[in-house]
Amino acid sequence: MKIINGGVCAAKGFKTNGIYCGIKKPLADNQNKNAIHKNDLGLILSDLPCATAAVYTTNKVKGAPIIVTKRNLKKTDGISRAVIVNSKNANTCNADGEQKAEQMCLLAANELKIKPEQVVVASTGVIGQILPIEPIKNGIKSLVNGLSYNGNEKAATAIMTTDTIKKEYAVEFEIRGKICRIGGMAKGSGMIYPNMATTLNFITTDCSISRNMLQNALNEIVKITYNCLSIDGDTSTNDMVCIMANGMAENDEIKELGKDFDVFKSALYEVMMHLTRMLAKDGEGATKLLECKCSGCPDIDTAIKVAKSVAGSTLFKCALFGEDANWGRVLCAIGYADAEFDINKVSVNLKSSFGEIKVCENGSGIDFSEERAAKILKSDEIEVLINLHSGNAEARAWGCDLTYDYVKINGDYRT
Image (tube, rainbow, N blue to C red):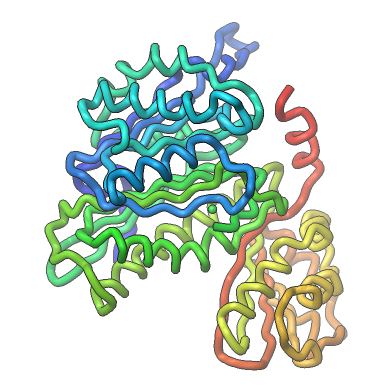
């Protein structure tokens, strides 16, 4: 497997674009006295019809784009050609939300000369504000005309809200002598506690795989990547992961379990895991990436629950920000995880590029150097290594520290 460039354009046959259409307000550039326009409308198009799989937020309040996307994929038996997505406005909790989402599909379809039900639609941003459709109408021709096999960066920036960096990743792999590619882009910085995966994730592949096997692979990998991510404990109304497979790599179609399916899943994990890490590291106001590894578990579900519990602990996130090796908060979070294990067997180590130190053994504190621990926690990437000493299963979860800036960003996010 090889890391490659191109994001969602890495796979054969995918064109993308992103433009500023006017949903976002221009930002003032006081130094140059000019307005700054950031992309707010994106498009992905496949040259060929795609087997399409998706997972959605479990929040009972669901954005209108999710409802319309589900309906479209049901009509086409999971076949799509395009994705249209806007940022700044979530199109959620609006009386005309579904109508606006359907209009977005129709506008894209008419310009692309495809059917509206072949379009996946997504939105992200403020909840409860009416989505203005006029900017999208006015921008759709320019959006389509600018489609390019190298347009991934424009699309990746079009889905950003409070993100500080674009998030892309792609890999190349081989199935029975055929070179295949998977690439993805993600957005999300706050309101992130996926339970399906504010995060939107779009993944493309030229691998030939049936829609059912694609959905199976996505479900499996979401469980151990996006669903193991926590920025602030809030599950968004608009979370969605969508993967499109157009088969242009010309490998024999993957229709069943076996070696080919395992290779595909490994590549998909590589992309989704790295996007998950990027989402965690770019958490709103974050200064540190937290990766929690729980090993020695009786089963994978126990490992996930314990790792997520620690990665999602507000108190431990605060301790990380203060570079305080407050291991008691780790034990506290382990203890309230909804899983069965012997807490008296648990050990905890803290690790970073500056070294590693054990802070807990057999469920109790041990003597350690606070100075050395503080130095380890000065890194911008911290690992918490938990061992339950009760089996062979392991899992990882990702998060970030909780800082003053998180409150500043969310205190006036809407206004």
